[in-house]
Image 1: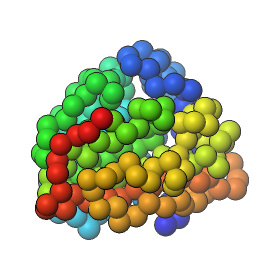
Image 2: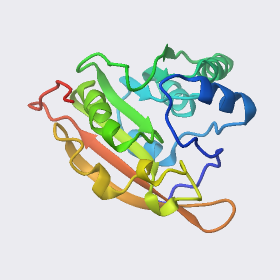
Image 3: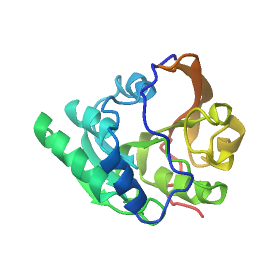
Length: 216
């Protein structure tokens, strides 16, 4: 994969339990509207179903899915981000089910979704396990989980400034014990200011016999 970079403002060093930090950031800057290219490549072959976008922000991935027939639920802590997502969805003529909640508190319905998307959610190390367990629990048998985030090797160029919150293949390995991980890899994408940035993607599937309960 070699998806093009989508410029976005730098992320704050912490993921607050409330959405006020992101309210301010979404109000002060223009955020990308194009979907994540890696997600597009992996999801395009799938038949539409129910999708959950955790940390949907202003809706770039949720709206792309909805335009292709997915029934999309988007969850985010930011009232401003969700309002922007709703406004753009209305303008385009698609429906989104939007939920305002902190990602560390939100518990999705068990085994309900055919796709769960987690794009650029960089939690503290101790928060990753419970969060991804909850995300995995939302998958129906045969459903897919897509995760993308900034690699540690992009520190200072993309993603949060706290290196502990950035991804590596090793940091994500072992966080999806109830899923069959088809891909866990780094890839480079072009940076508009020159050079390349490095991300990590996960593409995993719940097998029909896999347990659905979240673990902490």
